[in-house]
Structures are given as C-alpha cells and as structure tokens.
View 1: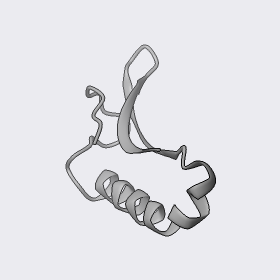
View 2 (view 1 turned 45 degrees about the vertical axis):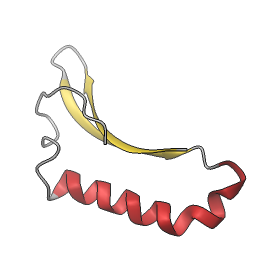
View 3 (view 1 turned 90 degrees about the vertical axis):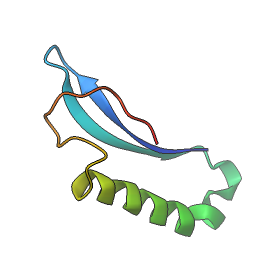
View 4 (view 1 turned 90 degrees about the horizontal axis):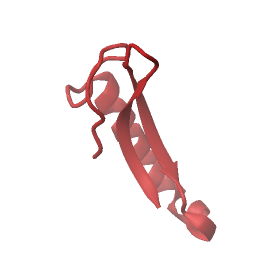
Amino acid sequence: MRLEAEVLQLGPDKVGVPVVHAYGAGGTGYALSPGVGRKVAMLVDDFIMGDKFPRPGTARKSTTL
C-alpha cells in the first residue's frame, strides 16, 4: 500500500505541487479506510499548517514521508 506525501515539480518552472498518495490496499481497503483517512488528513494538515512542505507554487525538491 502506498500512503505518503510528496511535492511534485511540474512544468518548465518546476512549480511545486503537493500530492498525497493513498492507494493499493486491495481487498482490505474497506477495513483500513478509517486509519487511512486519518493518516491522509494528517498529511494534508502538514501541507496546509506545517512547515514540512512548501506552499503550492514554490520550487523545492520532492520530499517523501
């Protein structure tokens, strides 16, 4: 299962775009969904409120948790 956050560098200006990946749970997706949802919310909160990731539109190398 992939459950992580990163900043993708897009376009010729290498604009940083925050992305949260949450897929690949297979048949256990329904059972895992509450925990996965909480982790996704935490990663999104890190993008919005934290300083782990740059604000959208600022260039920075890709970072993976």
